[in-house]
Image: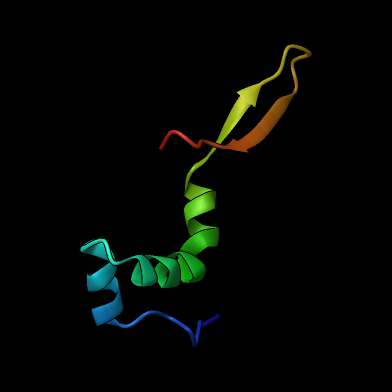
Length: 57
């Protein structure tokens, strides 16, 4: 599904350069994908697997 609120090239370029407003727009658009790529599986003491976002990435 196309996201109509995708950031423009200029917004992405500003985010790469560290502009806070641009970073917020990019994260708002791609936050779900970022979380999915940063998710790891941790084995719990009882043997079950827990999926968590690796905050250290």
